[in-house]
Length: 523
Image (tube, rainbow, N blue to C red; front, side, top):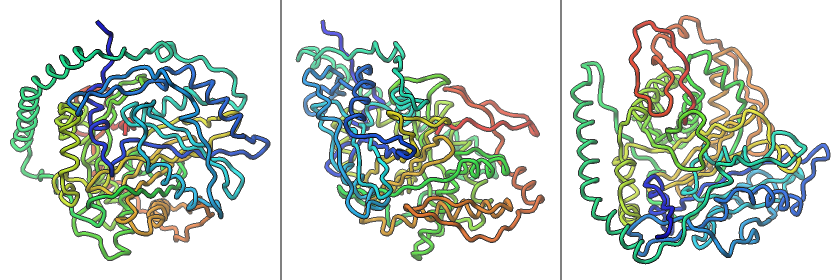
């Protein structure tokens, strides 16, 4: 009997959730510093990349799909593999600024990956106004999650400009796909999995209802039910077009806010997004009275888990856009995000876990039939925000330094905007994927991130440094205004008690007054 390698239920959303208007691949825009003699040409880049990727078997695998999407596909070797299908080049038009680059990246993103081949592409982008080079790394989400992609980058790129040969971890280098399943094997597996579906579905629904009832009974008199998500202009049906805007913020400034209010970097990132969305909607006269809510990705990886796979769940958190005071907004977000992550790590199940037991056909049908304007109310989410932790040290490709990595991620019906943050070197790099017809003037959202950070820095009595926004140097004119020590003390008393959570460890209660430790940045 053939040895098979079938996708896990965690990948069903990515293979079953693809439609003509929904792409289930992610991308990373990599900005290269080619100054100081570190020029990099297409041919040298291609040779370097082929040498590195040749030692990673997963890049030679393709999907063998089950007819009609009745079961999950299988990973098999692509016997016709050629780098010619995956490594390509393109030039951006004049004036070659960040806006033009964003348009080219959007164009490259809006094409489904060919499922008859390995599900990745790498584009070498020339024509930037300053003579620099950009790369676009495009991969299907069924291959790996954001943290897996970050680990992949550390495996194939370098921490030194010399670019010496790197040994690949044997656990990665020795990975093997399965054989092509014969029709009888595939049919038997499909029948077995479909026969188990009703029982699994009943069990998952029962567990979800039981958890909901327990939460209702255990909720104290002062605790209130989480509010729903208001409807906004970007909570509607989406088309096949995408837009992409991006920008970077200094990590040391974000850490200064983190330290001042005893929260996590992830909490500050969410507060920056919340502030930006408040500015954006307020300027258009569309800010709802209720706060926007976000779906955040929560990593389920244990310490040292470097596997190229998907190990992530989701949790709903407020963006506190109804709160005008930035400190109140930050603390409200921190309180909810801490509780949400503890629920996820303690085995709390949500909609994603129920979807994961469905066959791809049923997932696809659900995506196609759900009205986009009803999704926010049903899911309790307006905006998706993900935070991926990358290398704290600078990295190099063929001798050229990587300046920034801007992620581009998935949007689905009912959610026409996605923020993904990537922590790399000395910055937090924000990539914002949009549905252009639902989000006009999207670069104002990047402006809003800078403006919101400037608000926090003014509260700390610090003037924001110059930062790059939409390809131009800008300096925020915000009058420094220190936040009072009394307000900081009050904020810290109101802040949630934190603890370190690793892997699937359940939450542990703390005694009142216990010293806090920052929660790990898992999402």
